[in-house]
Length: 251
Image (tube, rainbow, N blue to C red):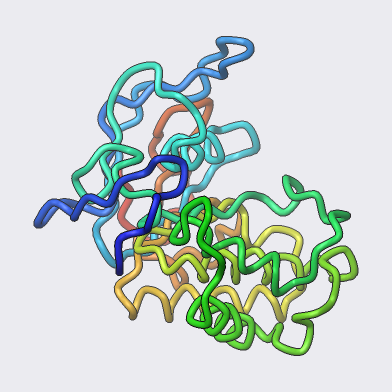
């Protein structure tokens, strides 16, 4: 992974701390900036490198808030976040964040290929134009997710499942080591769901670390290495019947 030139948003390239986990939080508390509402309280978790970790909990439990805080999109009220042993922002292009599909303006007039190409901007900096290599990466991830034939289609003409694949393709185009995926399996067709689970397994085999917010507790055992259960902004013991024997990190 090369250093970005004039790094995106002033980010820096800092090497990982040897033997540090991919993600660790220590008594993390996050409040909504506009209301002051406490969305996460004293959350301490960790995710080993090369693992698939599920974030499980009802709507409003704090799953999205946790992902956004790790991605540097929400301020931390107290506590600490370490990514490969470094603070948030030490290396922007090492972390890819996939928002929920509803957070994207799908009416924006942009074709699929250009949408996915935005995943490369963190490497390019503010002024460098995409290179041949960047476009090759985009073509590769589109083909990997079965979207190659739709490269020139406007994103607004994609089905819900195709939109979710396009979001995943944009995240993959970043070539990050840690992927934060917010509900990638929610409200998609069965074929897309299977494609995503297969992709998670492949990314794990490539050494990537995945933190995935999900409601799909029926596939925790086969799809993930561990699970973190959130309720009302706190890490809790998993409810009966959903742990499936998987490890659970408890604060």
